[in-house]
Image (cartoon, rainbow, N blue to C red; front, top):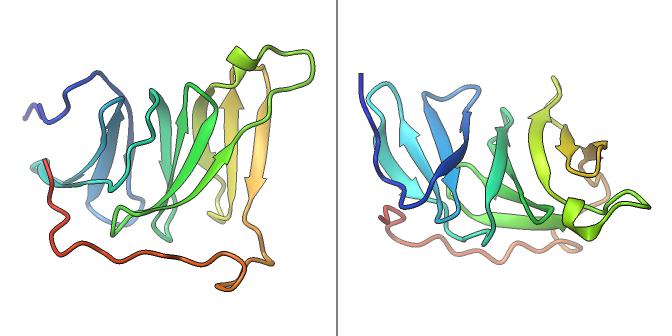
Length: 150
């Protein structure tokens, strides 16, 4: 039906939004968002994870998670493309630091817990910090006037 050629590097991950008619794709150069059914380019995410992104997942609240070869786990606002949180996985004791890669991500049915499959032969379950507030985790973000960047 269509071939999208917006990425400059190999596309390693893709995730559809569970409610909207859109999806995001990731490569080492950027994360891009497209609308369905025609695959029209919407915008790039506003930051670069600076690693090979192996996996992505989006929950119904519009929180997208991306996991990289270097063990980085980034959380994004689906609508704006803003990266609002970054985490780093911890390798299992006895594993090499090079085994920090995240290979698969999936939200559970509630959308509040994230499950990761990792290079150190582990499956990890992540949950949101219920004690987080705007004071403890301030969001310093001013959206750009035009996020449609190529």
